[in-house]
Amino acid sequence: QVQLVESGGGLVQAGGSLRLSCQTSGFIFSNSGMVWYRQAPGKQRELVASISRSGYTNYADFVKGRFTISRDNAKNTVYLHIDSLKPEDTAVYYCYTMSAAGMWGQGTQVTVSS
Image 1 (cartoon, rainbow, N blue to C red):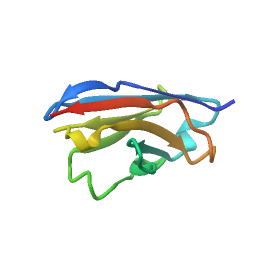
Image 2 (cartoon, helix red, strand yellow):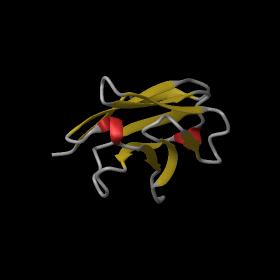
Image 3 (cartoon, rainbow, N blue to C red):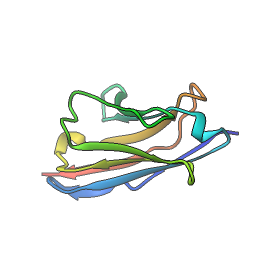
Image 4 (cartoon, one colour):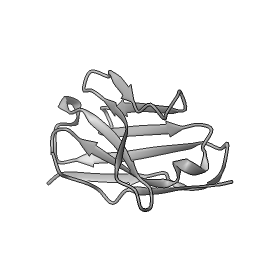
């Protein structure tokens, strides 16, 4: 069964950095595109970044150089590094695999104080 386990969130001050991780199992990770989403209170889930199985990346417009998505196929893990955190980045962050549509993990909470 597909498993997606996000971690690395926490409470940080504006201007700080976080590295989020998503450990996966139950599918062939190396053949799968991976995506990070986030959902803030009272708002719809929005796409943050994606990475193809060959390593090509795409980012949402609001990122503007602050977010970096990467993957480690040996560990079946996808990462999201966030620099210069802003209060508006506060949200639950989720990873998602294109190989298992509709499967979501528990997410990891990012809270940024001003």
